[in-house]
Image (tube, rainbow, N blue to C red; front, top):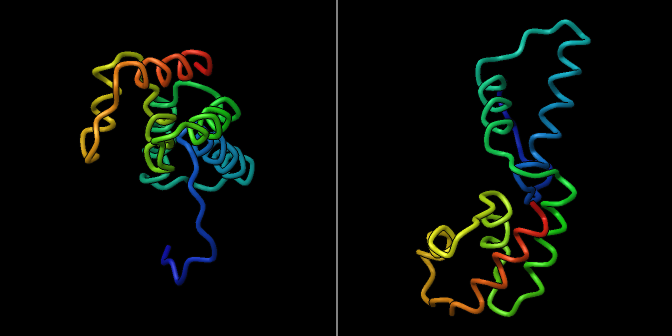
Length: 116
């Protein structure tokens, strides 16, 4: 399948992607159409790495964006990986030019735990 152009673009979390792919999969099964290798691998990847529901992940992103030093890209990365420790969270912030204090990291970890 060749893509001719992008109609729209929106950031979504991995659990939201999993829901979309599940719908596509069920439509393909009902229509008795064959799924491509890429689609099957995408579904498998999303199923293995999604750690929460789509609603909880979107809610987590909105709550993370209310924090002071939070960028949208980082909020989506946190919602996708759901870090549970300071070290895992520091890995998310590794490319940033600033460091987070221990208190800020703990606040983020608590938000993640409430949406797990």
